[in-house]
Amino acid sequence: MKPDFKIIAAILSTGSLMGLLYNFISPHRIPLIAEEKRIMWADDSLFTEFSQSPPDTIIIKGEDKIKTGSVNNTNAATEKDNEKAENKITNTNPDHETLQKKETPELTEPAAINLSQAYSLYKQNVLFIDAREPVDFEYAHIKNAINIPADHFDDYKHILDKINKERTVVTYCGGSDCDLSIVLGNLMLDLGYRKVYIFFGGWNEWLEANYPIKEGTQTQ
Amino acid sequence: MKKVFANNYFLLISRLVLGFIFIYAGMEKISGPESFAGAINNYKLIPFSFVNILALILPWIEVIAGILLIFGIVVRENALIISVLLGIFIAAITISLIRGLNIDCGCFGTAGSAKVGLEKLLENFLLLLLGVQLIYFGGGSVKLTR
Image (tube, rainbow over all chains, first blue to last red):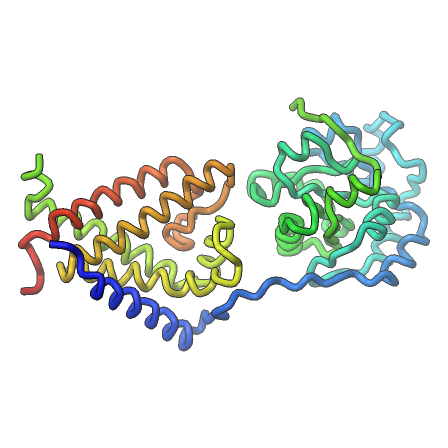
């Protein structure tokens, strides 16, 4: 006896109808067509003041530290420990972080930034977070960036414990056609980070612009 | 061997197991459509616009098919629906494993929140065997309805 496809069609349509009807009356109603999260572009004026401010004191330690996922905060004690001067930024006045806090507005959703905005933040030594897969990160990444793959966020989110929620961070992934940076940005916002920017052009634009990169850190 | 699989009590047990698992899975997903939609989206297999519709419809099909299986009503048809769904789940999990995605399975909505992995693949495969058994032999003579 073969299955009756009319009955199958009836079951499928009843299920579909009930699903849609239930959604109509349910308190947990969701829109039938999922809405893409619109990307809010950060206004250039937002960076004017910021870029005029003295370089902030956020220091990312050398690659040996990055590989272990350690991100250096700017407190004086940690700085004393860090004797490798080559990766330090010269201006290490502790007041500067406070300056940055005042001048970078808090966000309710991650704001997208373009290449020049990203580079301007990069020059302020803002922390860049690579949301791509570790293998891509290890092959090459924006210099001084750390890796928190958005698809393995649970496994890597302990790295964020060391990053102050007041800090400005920029997330990026492969390019404008990937959404890992947006996913990571939203996850970080959920965790309480309020200054999360998404470098929308991502790795591709950065590479084309010949901005600083770090290659071949494949050894663990 | 065929006799064993065609045994009325074995068929009844298969119906009950598949039925209850699908009712439970469906109910969990119905109670949290948004998180289930997120789970579907994580697989990155279907266009974003269709994610919500699927998240609303799929659990109800699972629940209805599960209830009908338990009561022994149009067993072959329901077993076919469930087997096709299981086949799709197996394909989705396999693709995710190949892609190396470390995502929540979404198999039982938010309950348990198990990750996709070989365990889930095996689980779905065993359920698929029960489904195929029911398609082939029907629901047997032990029914709650006449």
